[in-house]
Length: 359
Image 1 (cartoon, one colour):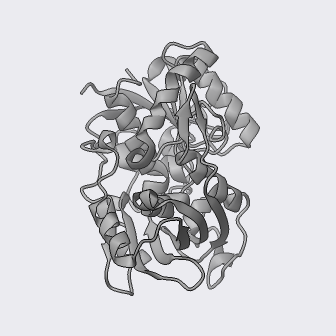
Image 2 (tube, rainbow, N blue to C red):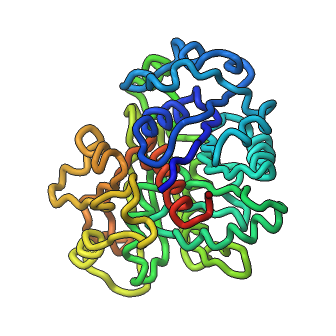
């Protein structure tokens, strides 16, 4: 496999910092270019993140002295310097949507952590183990954009990546309706307890936009590709509540689900344990050896001891049992800045490279 030169847009933010840490020893990807907003442009990376570095690891030595580009002004320079970019910019949706399209039209593939383009019918939103086949819409997107190499692919919302993978192996039993309550870490808001002291000993029962994403994005992931578009699944009803909780990293979900075909907790657990994920998601540098990890202990999964499972890329599930209103209920958890953000995007990029969509 060739060594790909990559750029990180939004490199100074929480997810951007996580990208730099996860990519520092990557066997396929080498960080070539860093970009951020105008306040960081022109500074060395270490200067740009001074007093803002929140990772548990030091700034990777290879990039400390790299000069940060302006992600908006320097599109042509950035596009010419890399094979593709990861986008983790913190901008409003309209600005992000237009900017990502500009990079794609500059023949620079974009792997986006943002939600701005997730709803576009020919832009795939992929959890590699689940809907890798949605890559099939990329040629149609290129035709629309008028590009040869440039396109946009997105990862899904961080919170749905803990419960959608846990439900997917049960699809053959015809999921009818889902109720999910998510309990989301403060890093999902780009915060720490030092920068957000109000979250200590506190729960906030509302996260802007999260409930809409939780109810809509799974339907696209479970949709079908038809005539160059992804048609969302219309057979499943989802309702959700999303709460911010005083946890550093790791999103937890309490899930209630009904099926059209009867299934026992025992059979559901076995399906989860045996699930290997889409064949195109396997044997990549960031692939897991066990994607879904089921715990028989009723006290698991727990954030502190389970969020780093499979280096933060695994899904942890427990407490599968019958429910009096729905058919089954369970609890699940995943690392929101690894599996749910930077790590999930890296795995997606690895798959796109191996399948020839990025050259």
